[in-house]
Image (cartoon, rainbow over all chains, first blue to last red):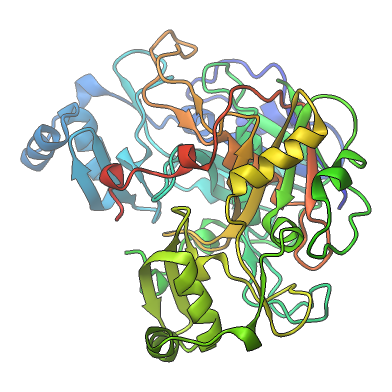
Length: 239
Length: 239
């Protein structure tokens, strides 16, 4: 693999609930082997994962938490419904672990770019399944990654990561292969799906309606899903 | 920006201390605007950041820590010399904060790919300065990122991140710009340099001697360095 190219999938219309994303991408992605990276938000919209804030009644717990994080109690209610546990809560910041096992701000519940001022967008219920449906429409030799934009401990700024994967091993294991000088490489398991998501994110301008990127030069191998990318809590030294 | 391409810089020889990396890249990088991503290891080698383990005498503290993490006490001694503090230490894992402020395994002190079995490679003393020297040789309109491969909390697998930057703002701030529906985007500061490093990392096979990648389609803007990417400890909810 000597080169990789990333291209915006052109002319993606504003997505609304019920849109057939697999058909839409099948008609717009070039022929040949490659990886399609799709921003979570359009997947969630197409799958109807939108909630009118006016329809949300915050629980006592949400009201209390909303006061301490200084957020809309209805958004906080949705965050709690989407979460297994609260990781951190301070004014302006609410980090939770979602039911999928993702650790991120607001459980991925997003108010920006929503189709109306009072609508929240939730993460897809099963992002691997969302990816698989799109992949099926694309056909063989093509993989799909659903990406979202997350903050990180220790480092400033957000990066895009994979939250759903189909048709591709999310991790590439170089453990045991020899390096140039013949020494066996130590544990070197690369998070390939996250690296692809990060790269595609460079083209997904948040303000420009460019929610899908086609990657050429990368031959998808293996299989797997989000679970491969989530660190076993027992092995996570950072919890 | 509709597309990006990433290409391996061809025919990089095995690097040894004293090699003139800026001249080497100036002769190999294509003309035009773009970003050169260089793996930390070749920068460290060229800068002579190599230490023979036989020359290292472990301190009492290193001997004790080496026992608890089950690593070579000489490597642990080097890790401690490179670090401000130990973040986590359990059998098989030693995570520290380096003098640069990077939180990573073994303070970036690496035994694999070293030019000889008993040599450790340390991170560059000042990776921004290393990037600046290469950039100066490349000329205007071109930026340089020094990358390294780090583990992360919560997620499996390693990703490449920027540890040195020249000629490019490491963060891109979209805060306050309007999204498609006119709503002001909330805090959206993307770690552009890390996304570029991650993408380039897809082509840097650890076993293949491909330590530099040229990015076309990305116009470098602004300026900054590693400091922009390090989260202020006071603002880091994960410490």
